Length: 199
Image 1: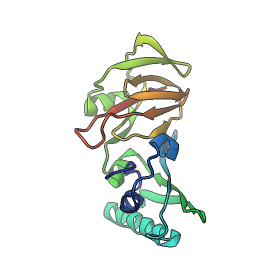
Image 2: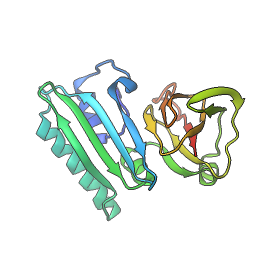
Image 3: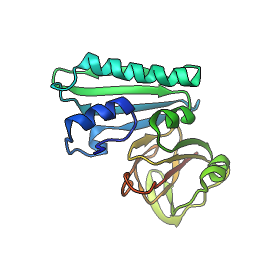
Image 4: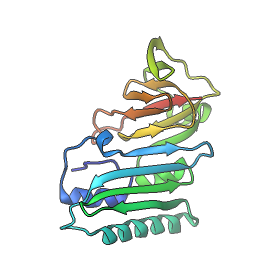
């Protein structure tokens, strides 16, 4: 049973083995932050049952997974930027990716961050787009302009972008002017895509 997203493959596998905590994605704090230069930081917060893994063992597993991904790519495209585990087993991990291709390759989930033209050519910009003004959804249907930036993803994550969000699909909730939370119906069935548009 997949309790959390595949943001961090090896940590996800560890949590699967210890069972579910029942908390939502938003409560866990699983998120991606997209920077202006195209780099992405993925963060995951969860609770580790230390009867199965200790903190250093888990960190070593994550480091090995990242090293394998970089060896496959022939360059450093994924980097562990932060790892913390307290005495209660609360784990906080941050992984930095050079771009959305590196994120998608490492996590095995659809993920795109770039211009609207490329997003349309690759993913079709399908869906019911809702207009967003100053962090609030309006009653108007949104039109995605070619000069906009688009995030396309197939995971329930909190997403932070480097600009003001102007449109979302109806499987996304606005949490701020530059942040949103993806609410996919079923990650285990047919792939559903969420879109976040910003400028």
